[in-house]
Length: 90
Image 1 (cartoon, rainbow, N blue to C red):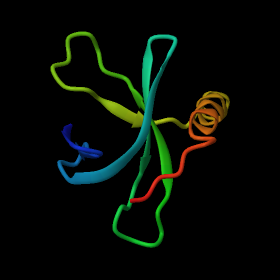
Image 2 (image 1 turned 180 degrees about the vertical axis):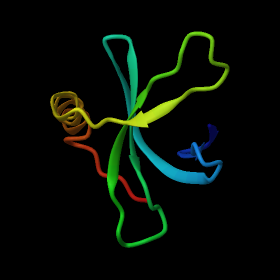
Image 3 (image 1 turned 90 degrees about the vertical axis):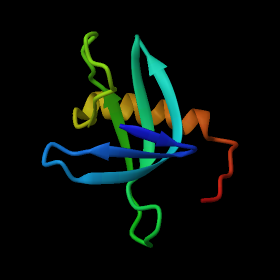
Image 4 (image 1 turned 30 degrees about the vertical axis):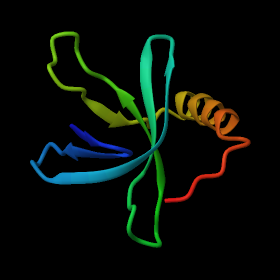
C-alpha cells in the first residue's frame, strides 16, 4: 500500500495496482477503517469501506473490503455521522 495525499494505491492479490481516493478514516474497537472512492477519474464512482486486517508482524497495511452486512452498516453509519456536515470536492 502506498499513500499519496488523499490517494492510496493498493496492490491486489494478482499484482495489479488499484488507486483509491480516501474520503475519511476512523478506528473502531482497535480496527482501522477507510472510506474510499474506487474510481476517482470516472463518473461511475463507488464508495467502499475497507478494513485493516494486517497481522502484527506485517510491515505494510493489508486492507479488505468490508462485506459483513452488520459490520458494514455500523461503520457506514459512523462515517455518515462524521461526514454529516462536511462537503468535499474531488
